[in-house]
Image (cartoon, rainbow, N blue to C red; front, side, top):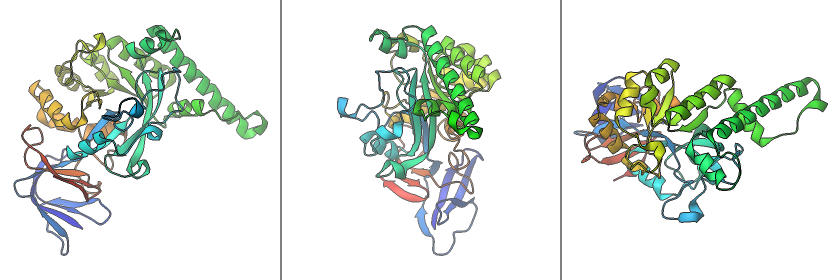
Length: 383
């Protein structure tokens, strides 16, 4: 049993509390606030410190785009076929990547690792803890099926003299695959009563069929407003759950996104305008989306911008007008909700796992640093 005493706690879902936080032997939060410390508990003095839930980046490529490795560690895009739903990020993930280690040291305890955006359908993501020796030890859950709209797929495949070379073709290819998956499901159902008519296993269609069955969402790379609307249009047609990734021009259609109850993982904003699709990137987009009721999470799109700078990017969002409380939610409980893990992670609450970081000051102050990080109540990093 662990107790952190005399600490200021940013619970995220229940305001700021002071007192003690108790972790039971299963790694879950037993109690917090003005509560007694159980006899025999290991005690950490949190006087003058701030305890925050482990930060969550809902969109990154750590471990599949390894740092300081180059071609050997570039495993995020199988850019020879625009349709690769059978690929899984976890099969290309190196848990010993330096980026993952530095994420942990910055208080980021959870990331969703996705394939890249070269393909119309890039593959399946995985949600991981940023600590562990093997992928199996790190995995929390599934991250959805990555799809991409806009410039990336058409740039990659027009260069190979293949389709798609236009936005029309990107949308058409995705629709074709969703229809094939629907037909595959129908044949499987027919095969239950007539085994001789059951289709042979098809890993591509199995992955897409899981979207149609709402087992996993589409994770749709879309910067421009028109690409965002195309993604939503296709999701509507097939009854698929969808999360918009990047959402750079979301401010242009914020009211529509809010009306639809869209979830958006926004960023990376702390970067230059590297291509035409991000020419309108601005921290004010986060504020506009929030004002219109869009559930937002902030991403660094690691390694585009290193995930260790997540709190700095969040502070810049506050500077641009996003309320501090909402900004903190955008790197804790909101990405947990978007990823479907908010019953266990994303806030300091009774019954949730004790993924948390002890800071020597406000986490949105650039001068503050992480002193200790815990995953399931276990100390996994000490400065």
